[in-house]
Image (cartoon, rainbow, N blue to C red; front, side, top):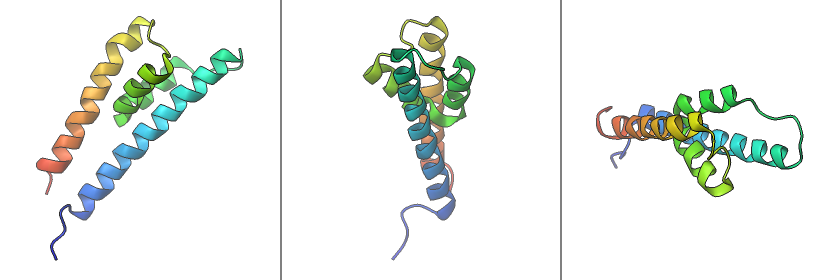
Length: 97
């Protein structure tokens, strides 16, 4: 039986998926820390993780947790990071064989 995806495609998609879950979790943790007035995760780290293929997780978490939605840099850059993640997934699935 033939595989639908090659091993490299599975590894890359898995890596992108894990990065999105990690970024989603970072936003959740930062929101909880903000509520409790505790030490926060830096905006720099949140943005870096978003642009390292975690943009979809960041965008989803912004909507679910209503976190960083009023910060201009996040309003502008997270959709771009999400688009980068989406385009990367499309490239891996359809153009990388």
